[in-house]
Image (cartoon, rainbow, N blue to C red):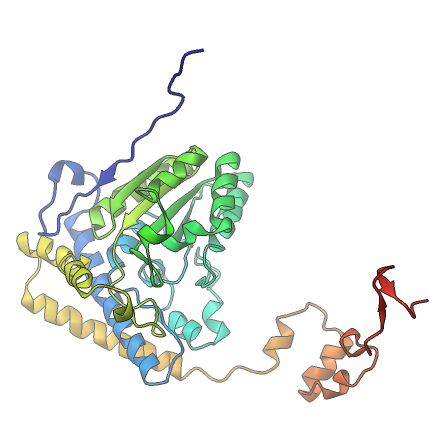
Length: 384
């Protein structure tokens, strides 16, 4: 039998707004209005201010480790704008503050999370989003499960799942992609390719030319977009979400952006990231690009910039005040939210805040004396 091509494909890349602020008007049709862009730009300023303030909180010992979102605001805001607030569902990892804030999450929740306060993970019931996810890649499975529930209930809802390029190297990611395709669930996978998985560059963890092509193995529509372009991110996400809601199944988006900060405040990217690379990335900062667009259309000026920055500082100052003035949590919470009916031994712990009485109980398996083992039989020699 002669050879024949059984499969071939190509990956498209979309950019609508260039680094110089110029826009392809034909591609921009039906995407974002000037009012939308102006509003999203103000949100970018607010989120950048929040990011810098959170960094200072960590450095001053008032908060734990924090991963900055700096440089990725357009990718998440452009995508989030394509979602219906309170209906479509956001499953984030840990750089989606802009998307979560846009969809109503009170900003102090993010601070509480990184302060180690579990109340930061208690997402208000009226918001369609999951808490921040730090474990790499696991949220992809959560997203598929949520989308599957929407499909089974015949609800007009879809899910967007954000994750980084490093997550595509995990088993959870591939399991999620496979299940999503087989079950044809309404989920959009959005890979924020910020070039670095902690200190590992893309080329050292993946031999593929793009991350987008990973979706081809699962029979899933896929596209690469300029992640620093609000217009492109809105369009590709809107198209994918509409397809998902219509029963077309999952889609994959690779948003090419750049992590302008360190991986987290526990990292020092200067040890592994070339200075010239960062310098080049700063020139295509999504905030600068969006401002150039607005200024070119006479929709923004220095006075508005100063006012927006002042407003953002005021909002963030108030948010920090709310987070730091939260009353201490009760020690009862760890018991009350663990079991529906508290076992007797935990009731005693709750009442006494002591575990020594339980630890002295010789019936506990972990405190049993070691027994000699007969390795030929595979059971303790003195067993009955």
